[in-house]
Length: 248
View 1 (cartoon, rainbow, N blue to C red):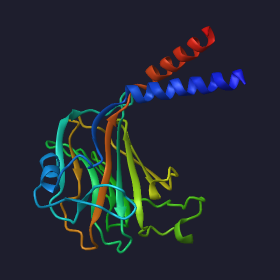
View 2 (cartoon, one colour; view 1 turned 120 degrees about the vertical axis):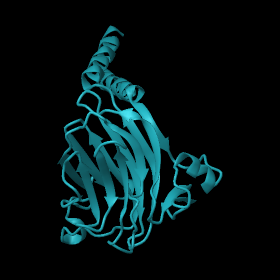
View 3 (tube, rainbow, N blue to C red; view 1 turned 135 degrees about the vertical axis):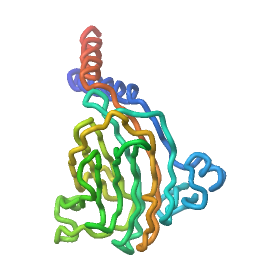
View 4 (cartoon, helix red, strand yellow; view 1 turned 90 degrees about the horizontal axis):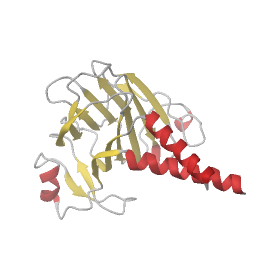
């Protein structure tokens, strides 16, 4: 029992160190805004996205109907193996059409650093891209259900009703995307694209493509952009936690 407790203590210390060291750049659950106008002060583009509620989501989200994207400018970020950037967004799909162009992205205003993930009608529905100068749109082609079976039994990339969690990790060399259907903690697909980083980094966080979406709208929620610490530093902190437990 003492060994088990010690192990749990180390894990807790390591997790706490990871959480404490991550630098949050943007975090928004859209609950702090009194109305759409207040939201658009932060996520500029008046007349585009609006505050909305969706079945299965107890609070506000940003409804994107297509057209001009909502975005905010941030201090320039650089991605590296020592300090990767992680961008996570929940996107609601009503499941009615695969002809949507509704994505979350990271960009640079001055160079072609461009990361996007979400729903796109070419080549398929759930898709990603990394133009750094990596490939353009690439569909998640390995989507499985929570039991590990091909989606709908045939492996097709088709709309699934619900809130889905999209995430990308940028390490200066690659963009690693994951798709968690229904946001239940099970990763249903992964895509890794080459993303050679430009020195100008990224300075813009976007919700929506700026393009029309003939297949309908989508909602965005729980936006989180953060930069995590160097893994070696975390390992040292974890070892420090072990040493403290041993002393005790």
